[in-house]
Length: 232
Image (cartoon, rainbow, N blue to C red; front, side, top):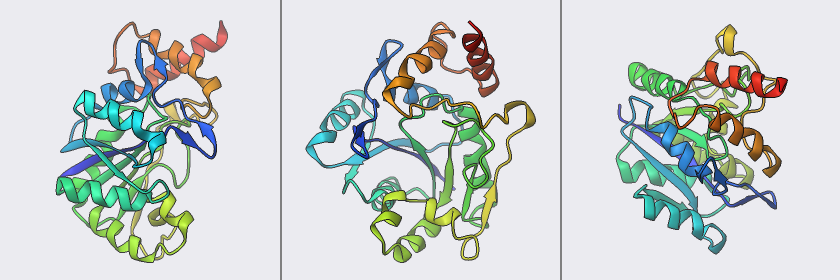
């Protein structure tokens, strides 16, 4: 099964700036996430999905300049954009990521993609958002194209379409989910490693800068760096 990483990006969400193109250790935040994902294995490709509205033109332009595929569509139709991205890439599996999480561990992405390939359609959803135990900012949803296509037919409410693969994990009586448990050494749900507001940018930038240009650092290394910085 070929698995596509799908990054959801928007310049604003719920009326607030997301900072997805804000400078982060010398590069746009979205670029930092793409740098991290370059270390993930088992992926057939990486695509950014965003809206076709004027507000998100900077994201589309950034992707074009970088040579990263960008799937556009209605702002509030994430599930539709994800299905379109998978169809364009002829992908049978997808890994959904939020552009506001530039510290996502490539090893976690590899794990989910590998499980999708090994189970080969026997599971509909694989992720760590059903029973959160990982640090915030490590959220990942893996799914098959077949399951998401079927779910799309059931998503009659605008909110369901806006949340994409969340429909799969929230309907365990219909779909076959696998919830990943965090290893004890990284089970830190109290730690925030995503950009939930622009105020988080300096802290996330400090973590990046602590690795002096490296982009392959692990979640365990991130937590150690975050603890050191918090103690200063």
